[in-house]
Length: 152
Image 1: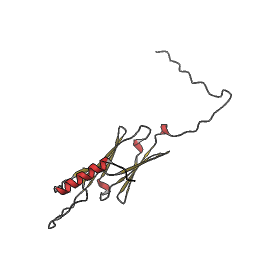
Image 2: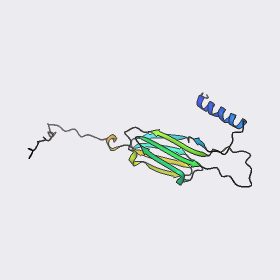
Image 3: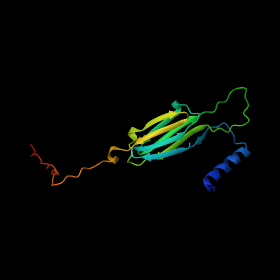
Image 4: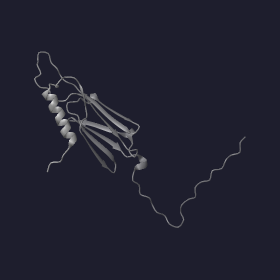
């Protein structure tokens, strides 16, 4: 059974219209690379497809619980060649993700291999699962008292 995806249908229609009216220009476009997001007890793992992108052309920024990945895939135009078809996407690839506060964006790790970027976002220390020991017999210590010193 095939599922109806209106966004895919719209994207396919747009691509057909572009091809029909010759919009296969070499101007850079803004593209959203596909991503898989997985979560386990240690954190998030985001996997983005960035084929044809050089590792030094990838920028990753983390700020205010937002993670942004941006890269550029360039079109290689050579003198003396005529392009009859330019179907491979090129331009700026960008994705922005809102990351819940339970993840620590100061400790993001990134690995790029064979056109795939993998980002690992660990859970924050406060959000880590902990085991609490249950004591019996009133063994909890009373909270320390704060005493104000006389002013001099």
